[in-house]
Image (cartoon, rainbow, N blue to C red; front, side, top):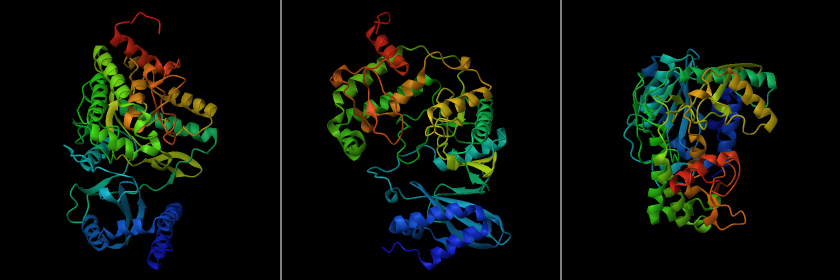
Amino acid sequence: MDSALTEAEEDSLRFLVQHDPTLATIADGLRIDIEDHPSYVRGMVSLIDTVAVNMAMEQLMNRTCLGVHLFALGGFNLLFLVVFNDKTDVLVRFRMPDTCSYLVRTWKLPWQPVDSIQCEVATYSFLRRRTQIPVPEVYGWSTTGSELGAPYLVMSRIQGVPLSMEESPVFLDRIAEQLAGFENQLCENPLPQIGSLVDETGTVGPLVCEGNDRFVPDQRGPFSTSKEFILAYIEHELAVLRDEETWLKMRAVLAERNGGVGALPKAYATAWLSLLQAAILQVPDGPSPEIFRLAHVDVFEQNIILRAPDDPTIVGVIDWQGARVLPRWDERSGLNLTMLSKDLPEEEGVRLQTVYAGAQEHPDSDLPAFPWQPLFVFLESKPTWTRARRNGRDSRDMAATQPLQSRRRAATWPRHGRNDCHAPLQLAAKLASGHTNDKW
């Protein structure tokens, strides 16, 4: 299909910039998407009845609609900007069909006890009720989307510009302090279990899955302790290993990342996870109660909206899709600098983390004595995604984990090492073997 934009597509991009000059970057990104993936983008847009969207938004918002314009698309969603005659606008986000994503998929979204859109709406309502964190306002939603052709969410557009981590240290210090303040607010509104919110009052239900979410085990909870949470992940991976057909299929689909089916011996992965499971069952439960807080799971620059390019005031934290209630020790998620600082020079990243820590109000003494976080990092590098690293040894001799340093790098499965991050796995192995007093 021709990658040149049609006249209608050019008109739509021009309209976005005329409506709000700060959307020029959005328009430029859409142009690249259409030029690079014309069939995909146009195929996606054709699935949405924009005339029906126009009529529905006029009825919902009680205003005259001037147009429905493509605004963004990703692996799982399609976003439209609906503009009204009073120069206001709303965003309508549609969940895309499973078979139409850029991503390689061989299975569909699993059955879920609660729809993820319902959980996202509950999350926004909870945040607006309990915190001062700036988030979009929800105007309407549907988990079936029967009237518009796909499940959808209608919300306000927060005006501003996305964060850039290439700013001055003083600018980034202000960002770190604000994010720490937001995380403080979340910790000040603790929730009773690990899972996903199902209503604005803070009721926690089972974990919901977004797309092929590798961070959600088959046993969805909700979980009352970190120990239950970790054990669910271990059992999930062992179940995959027990299913020979699924194991081979998933290893093959991800061969470019994991080195192929034979790059990690199944018997070794099974033995190691079984050892870990037996060890964790012996670990004492953490302090009661643990701190479980609502956590954003996609804290990247484009989801932090600033007032202006030269003003570091955060006016919006967007895209809480997939947000869930997680333990405070889980630094993989939450309004922290884990993902934002990963591409900074090491010295600057450490400095910025120090600024963030200085603005936190909840001391580390509140955290469980057992260091769950490195174990969780290990479980994220699941067998189907990873390859064994042979450090001069056969994989049978590997006894610790190398955490993922970047999502762009090929992950590796356990190997022997002396880094402090290996200590929890060493302890687990000692617990399971009964040699807790032996020198490792």
